[in-house]
Length: 200
Image: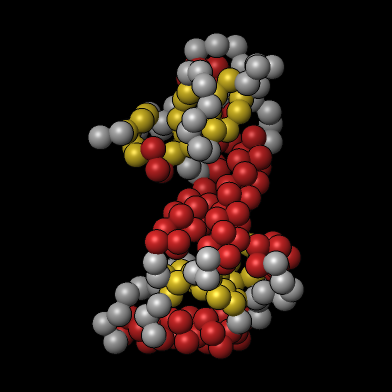
């Protein structure tokens, strides 16, 4: 019902799966992740390669119907903003008690069905990731939900979001506080596509 058309693919899609861009006061292209900046906007499906293609083909000027300049590293800027948004929502969820860390606690949350999302630091040891992946598979084999897992953030980024050191494995727990985290993490995952930073 609230569909928009991507300026690159020309396909209609939900605003939840797209990124809005507007023209800044200086004539630059500005990402509008919250979709609330004033002015005419244009939409790009939330994939890094499509943002890069829009820059390369100068599609923002056509989409915004004005002469604008898209910085060459706009795709990287959007990645930074999506990362910041996801980590910010993770930090808020942690403050409300909706996120836990530590391999043992995460394993328990997976096996009891309270985890809705698992996060591994990018530098997590393969052995630790494998053990938690095994727990996720067991839950599915027992008829439970499939719990997605991602390696989108560095340990340092997770440490900052948690306000503590050495966060390697974390789980977002079921509940209202988890909804925003899950949406933002999945959006970042889709945006990065097949990069090595992703595990699903």
